[in-house]
Image (cartoon, rainbow, N blue to C red):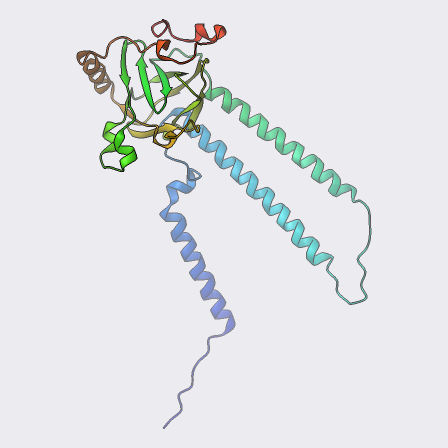
Length: 295
């Protein structure tokens, strides 16, 4: 019987195949999640400032990766450049190295200064309340739901914690309070608490702000995308914190007007004022509350 010879691929060929497979796998993974990668795996922004947040987030990660690469390079360089080559080798001993000391003193200072210089303008933009808003909503957090007062329209939405949340039943989102906003509009949120500290967070707004008893916190956003978005409390506030949820619907101006008209027809007129709160507003906070919501 003739003997069959087995061919063995050269080592270089195997290495090339491995590189091709790794590159193909990496490329497929990156392309399949291309949108997430360009956003730094943050949600799709639904406000103007959301794009600025994503840009800052990505720049921060790039800087962090660059610093990490530099640190690993220095570590590996020291490991290989100063490794023991013979048994009787004794590494050169020295107490300091001026260029390195300058490097690891100056570079962190420059990094902190650059980070500070980029953070402050973005934070100011996120908390800018100078523009005249198109819609003003007083958001009142309470254990464990939300009240939404539409200040200019003098109507309100009141929420109650859904019992189905604790029972794990389906259809819960339909029972949650819904905050409806018009698209391409400047919206001002006036945040107050009825009891303990909460935090108002609409995930796709890429922005959140604490709600503190006795205080009024305010921020504005400009909506850019229609759709339904998840809202939640982002501050541990008690036993049912995880179930303190709400919906946000960004709709056309016509749909928004119809929603407001529906609230008027259902009798949800007026405002749910601070008389429902457990704590009074601090004296210096009274003027921050819109007149339509004050007692």
